[in-house]
Each structure stands twice: as structure tokens, then as C-alpha cells.
Image (cartoon, rainbow, N blue to C red; front, side):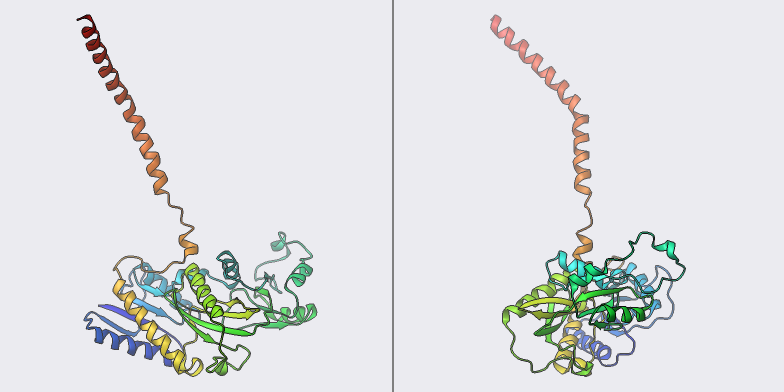
Length: 360
């Protein structure tokens, strides 16, 4: 039985709708050995967790026990969406650097030391940092007003708008042990939030982040230039292929016709009907169900079935061709003496034959 599970927390509308839609599609296709359900965990034993072919992860960012369970499931073959190993290593500051490398515009950004020393450290722990820190360079590059946010955070938690250096000092003091980013403000005309499934299935939604949460998805927005939408679509795919996320949202702020990627590490994005609206909810339920079924069909028991982004796969140096070339040279060297010996014998015979012929 190829089971599709969904692991979730406080959300109510998406998980059951997803389960129902997957089971409806399975029945409609006449698939006999597949089903969807809410994940149930009774015990977690190392290297023994192959109950599910696919698991949609909606909660492990908040529950470390679930993250450990999912890594164990992944190593036994479960296609965990999203990849729990990459999710654990991912962070927003790194993502910004990666975006620049793949040609997607992002706001100018610096990382800041925490306002309080981490536990079990003292002044000697920071001997590799230059004091005073070059705050002026950062302020001149980013400008004010600017945004300060956790370098590895999410869900708009601990996000500050800072008006000037004094305002930054005051708010930075509230962040305690958090490592923050200082980021350029993009005065946008249009703003989009985009669902991206399977790294290349994109659904663009007009979005207004300055509105109350339940009013952020714009239902009847003004028409948008198709060139901008095409660029947003392309950037969504470019980012998610590099990151390797199968279920993500990407946010863009458009300034002077240029979409800037603002937030693109949301592996458990909002999918509640009460916030995203009925139309967007229908899209995410339908397409998430299709993706999960396809992943279950592709599932190979006992093998790694995770998605890895091109940032990881492109760094893997393939040594095999080099090894083969070296091996080929060694074989030639070994055979060479034999070939030379044979050539000498053959040549000698021919010379004798030619000599006899001449004498005749």
C-alpha cells in the first residue's frame, strides 16, 4: 500500500480537504494500492519508518520531534515534502545570496550580530570581529527607512521597520539572541504571493502585505502588465529549482517594473480558506493532491525519494569520469610492452621476406 500522509498542526481547512481530494482522485483513477490519511505516529525507531510513500509536512518547523521523525522516514525512502534535511539547513540570508547567484533581484541586505551574546560566550568568543562594526557602510548601502528581520525566521515574526539609526538601535536591543538582517525597503507598486508546487507549477496571487492578515489576498485587483507576470513566473521556477522545494510560496515586490524577491522560504505556507480565499484554496488543494499522487506513483521502496535543489546537486563533483580516464591510461601502459614486442617480430619477418625476394 502506497500511503500518502499529511502531518499538520493547528490548521483545519487544508489538511482534510487535501486528504479527501487525494482519495477522490485515487478512486476516480481506479488505483487499488494507494490511499491518503492524516499521519499517525506510534513509535519512531531508527531506520525503520517505511509506512508512508509520501508525507506532506505542514508542522515540523514548530515541533522538533516531527522533524526528527521525518528525517528518519526520508532515509528509509519516504518522499517527504518538503525535504527535511534541506529545510533544516535553509535560512533567509543564505537564500538572498542564492537568489543573486541565480539572477533573481533581491533587496540589498546585510546580516547583523545579535544584540546579546549567545549563551556560554564572552568577549573572547568575538575576537574575529572587527570593532567598531562598520555600521555606516551598511546604512549608506541600504538606506532608511529599512526592514530588520530574523536571518532564519518566518511568518512575519520579529519583523521591524526602522526609520533611522537611533530607531534601529532601540529595536535591535529588543531582539536579544536573534541574528537579524538589515534589508533595503522596496517601495512597491504591485506585490505578489505565489504558490509553487513541484518546483515549477506556479499560481500567482495579488497580495497586499500591509493589510490585516485576512485581507491580504487581493481578489479584484487592477490588471497587471503581462511582462511582469511572466517575469514573476520565471523567477518563481528559478528560485525553487535552486532551493529544491516542492511546496513553497514566493513573494515579490515590484518597483519600477522590476520584481524583487522579498520572501521565498515558506515550505509550510498558509493554505487556509479563510485567509487565501476560495479560488486560491481550490487551486492549492487540487494541485497539491495531483503532486502527491504523482510522487506516490514514482515512489521506489527503499530508495531515496527526496527532491534536492540544483544548489546541492550542482555542487556534487562527479569523480567517475576522471577515475575512468586514469584507469584507461593504466590499461594502455600495461598492454604497451606486449604490443611493441609483437610489432618487432612482425617487422623482422617482413624484412627477411623482402631480402629473399631481392636475392631472387
